[in-house]
Image (cartoon, rainbow, N blue to C red; front, side):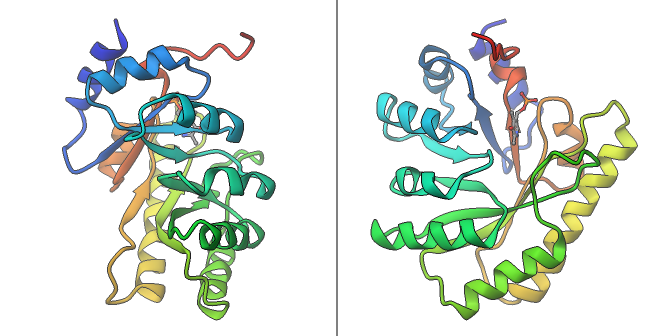
Length: 224
Ligand SMILES: *Cc1c(COP(=O)(O)O)cnc(C)c1O
C-alpha cells in the first residue's frame, strides 16, 4: 500500500475532531510530500537537526510537531517555526523555550510530557514535577510559552489492559492539571496519546492528538 492509501485508511478510523500527526522521522522528503499532497499538514519529528532540515526543504504551511527529547542548546533553532513542542520534560527546557520564544517574538505552543510507561528509559514528568513547571511559569511570568496540554507514550506491549491503564492515567493527570491550573481558562485542551499500535485504545480513552508513523510510512530503517 502507498503512503496515500495508508493515510486514507487510517483517517477513516479517526473521528474528525482528533488531530492526526504523521510521524515522519527517518522518512525522506518524497514520502512526506506524498502525504502532504493527500492533504496531511501535521508532521512529527524527534531529532532537532532533521526537523530543521525538513522545515527548510518542505512547504511552509506544514505544522511541525517536535516529539522527541529536546536538548536546550537546540531550542533556538526550532523556536522560530515549530508548531508544537510535545515533549517538555524539564524546567531548564521550559525556561529556554520561553527565552527563545521571546527572542523571536513568538508564543511557543507546548505539551508537558508525562512518564506513564513501565519502561525506565522513556522521558517524562510525574505529576508533582509537572506542577512545579506550571508554578514556575506563573512565578517567573513566562509569557512566551503556552502549555496546551499533555503528552505520553504507553508501554510497548501486547497487553491492552496495561496500555489502557496508562492512557487512563494520562487522562487523569490532564484533568487534575486542568482543574488546578487552568480552572475557568481556555487553551488547555490537548491530550496527545496513541501511536500505530495503540491509537484506537488511546482514542477510546480521550486522546485529542494521535501520533502515527509506521502505519502511514512503513517500518523505519534506522541503519540506512
Ligand atoms: C516514533 C514515535 C511515534 C510513532 O510511532 P509509530 O509506532 O511508528 O506510529 C509516536 N510518538 C513518538 C513520541 C515517537 O517517537
